[in-house]
Length: 282
Image (cartoon, rainbow, N blue to C red; front, side):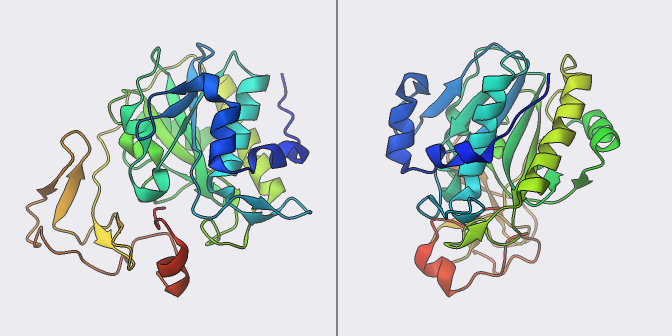
């Protein structure tokens, strides 16, 4: 059964977060700081996106430019995929990803998933934050020929309590524009990524892979808001279970924030992000 993704339906999800949540209020689990929107079809694979955005969601008339593609484009794709293939996909939309406090940490699924795919990344690679089984990675790259990239954080990084392999797939958002007030995406790249993903899903929908060794966050300050994100130069890590920062015992001062992040896939922090961003988390 083929997937029909019609981007003409995209504007329906490019609304203020409160209106999006109101539309799907019957799917909400939890309260404001813990809530997720859960489309539970009892399917074998979970798709993940997030409803919060750095910029107010906006679409220009062409449909390929605007703001808030991170991650309203992911919400649109995941919602469409589970609508058309409820036999394959469940969906959870998290909140507060852009400030590093994803409500994915509070999400308890109704059943086990064979693997989990987040749709929240620029361009056309994928990342796993050390949350994917090595055999899964080998097979995924063999089937899809999608490049294995590097990233710092998304919702799945706070879902390590779920013992399923997790990856974050690029969905064609233009490089360096995911948090910009003038963002864009590439429809053909997006569709190609979904087609490649579907090829893999159809082959391995019934195979379960456990989670990888786990994500280790690292902290670095990037702007005047004081929001932190993650970087191998820090002396501490954030423990999602205790809510405390813990020393990495790597010789760096756990009370010091190190700057800049040479490994981050986002652009160098600048005045625009100081003024506009809730975060700069990849």
